[in-house]
Length: 177
Image (tube, rainbow, N blue to C red; front, top):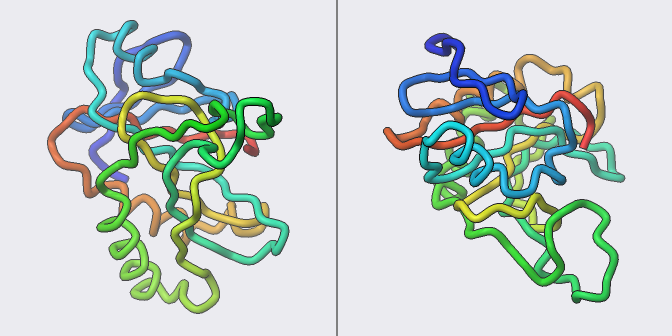
């Protein structure tokens, strides 16, 4: 999408900026990027109002999907094993954009003829990373065939341009989560 330029560097993370929005490209599994907001603030001095993780969705069904969900495994007890980051019994504050973005994502997916092939869905929270800022994941799923679809990526990108003037971290993961 147009408007992005090289952004500040922090802890080896490649960064791009568009006004007060920061897009970080991470090579690690997103679900294990604990305290990314605090790490970014400490390295750059920029406060983080929220985090949106742009990622790949994996599902046993292998169905094409565009998903949005809050972050955390609040359903797990402290003695249970974490399979995908976070902290048992914990959830990040949900990003207030979840509802409006789900509706917008559905409208964009329909206007780009992705529906009914792609299911647009709100998932339950089920994994990390642990983060203090209001957060959510927005994902393309559910297999490599769909992760590589430019029309699905365009739909996610269009939704992601609807960020108000506040510092926010958008994260893209270049490895399978």
